[in-house]
Amino acid sequence: MNFQWYPGHMTKAKRQMQEDIKLIDLVIELVDARIPLSSRNPDIDELGKNKYRLILMNKADLADKERTREWSAFFKEKGFFVVSLDARSKSGMKSITDIVMEACKEKIERDRKRGIKNRPVRAMVVGIPNVGKSTFINSYAGKACAKTGNKPGVTKGKQWIRLNKSVELLDTPGILWPKFEDQTVGLRLALIGSIKDEILNVDELAVELVKFLKAEYPGLLAQRYEVSEENDIIELIRAVAVNRKCLSKGGEPDYSKAAALIIDDFRSGKLGHITLERPEI
Ligand code: GDP
Image (tube, helix red, strand yellow):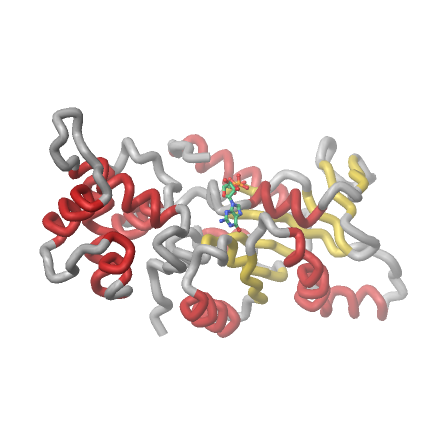
């Protein structure tokens, strides 16, 4: 996780994706439910054209349920099948196969009319780093899966996970690069911890987060840290340092420690269910 991208990586990832996508019927795209747009790379729309499309809004356990509903409607409106989930929990996986079949029903019907029986739907998981691709594949495939590889017509070395008689999944996910050249996108990726903190300063991240929370989730900071939201942002973070005993070696309130605490509390969900962006309708 948390790796840096260079142009060479992106070209390689794109080329790999172009190859893999030829082998499949359905693209299962994972996004982070806290930033459903900023955690997407829209290039997948071009790469995955003519494929069936399913968006999994993952880490929904950390996101604002109302916003998740809005985002779900937004993506459905655009023609995607959508499921929100916590990929760590196996319980949400049962419904995925039904949705996969539903998304691919045209193909299944076409096969049936041509007399082709038992040809499984093939899918691959894609997404930017850290959205939960490996976690999802592990939960969805579970232990019971049998790996099937090197079938005729399949690129040598490709491993397929046979999920059941109807669905096969490419065992390695496609990695998309984030659109971090957009500053707002970069900031949101940094807030959820998908970009190294060394790149974006935690003090500044905390300022941006506090600004956002004051506006979009009023009362939340006041409640958790017993601070007044009337304060300006720097004062508010200092007050968190005092109340939470974030102290420097000399015993002074330590602003940076408080900033890091607020960011950690957000990332771990301790601040509550928060989504950082709304769909523009
Ligand atoms: P990948 O880089 O897309 O393969 O992401 P990983 O599967 O390695 O997951 C990145 C991190 O997110 C790991 O620490 C996972 O435990 C965590 N994670 C994955 N899915 C979820 C989820 O639905 N909810 C929460 N809270 N954490 C998740």
